[in-house]
Length: 72
Image (cartoon, rainbow, N blue to C red; front, side, top):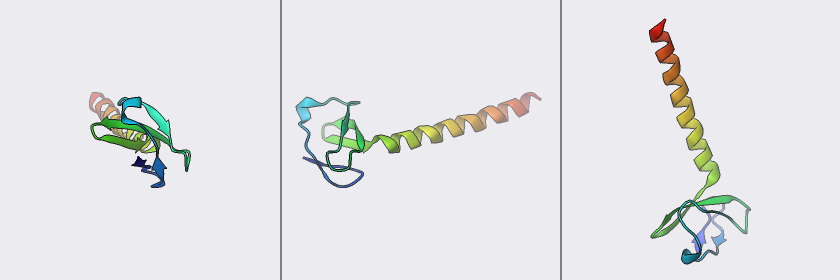
């Protein structure tokens, strides 16, 4: 039994039933959770992952703008 990283509710998942990268849902709050590790079993909110991806895209956009200015 794991705790949901969003609501701290109990997430009932068997370690042998999931693999790294799988997505499951919290029964209590409905949050989508991604399995980020299997030994030990770790979950992370997919919303947190989406925010990290957005930050990476912003960083890349800034780099692209700087490169364009260098070429001018």
